Amino acid sequence: MLKFICYPRCTTCRKAQKWLDEQGIEYEFRDIKLDNPKLDELTEWYKKSSLPLKKFFNTSGLLYKSLDLKNKLPEMTDEEMLKLLATDGMLVKRPLLVGDDFVLVGFRESEWDSQLK
Image 1: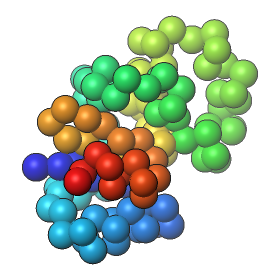
Image 2 (image 1 turned 90 degrees about the vertical axis):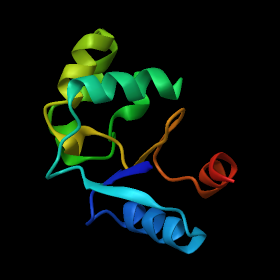
Image 3 (image 1 turned 180 degrees about the vertical axis):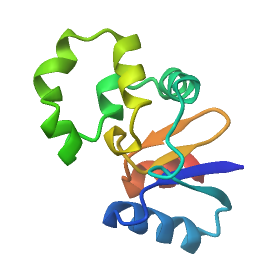
Image 4 (image 1 turned 180 degrees about the horizontal axis):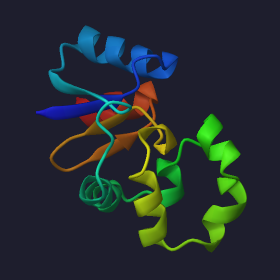
């Protein structure tokens, strides 16, 4: 079953959830603020996604900005970045849709549509 990891107060997450429901796609819901992704999960998702690790950061979030990560991330190793992501779900870009052989980060309807159909 797909895992849908989101922040319920996020408008993009709500839009993605509505899209999943309209498509009749079953998923397991997970609130990223209440159940922060663990280091091993993030590591697995990163490898499965084929995306640069920076794409997993919520660059528009207040926490990202307050920690000045724009300037710090380029100097960090992948391991350091993954450990940082595991400290707080609000650092993680959302929604995340995790399948057996793919991970989608953020909601782009065309990307989700082509992956799920």
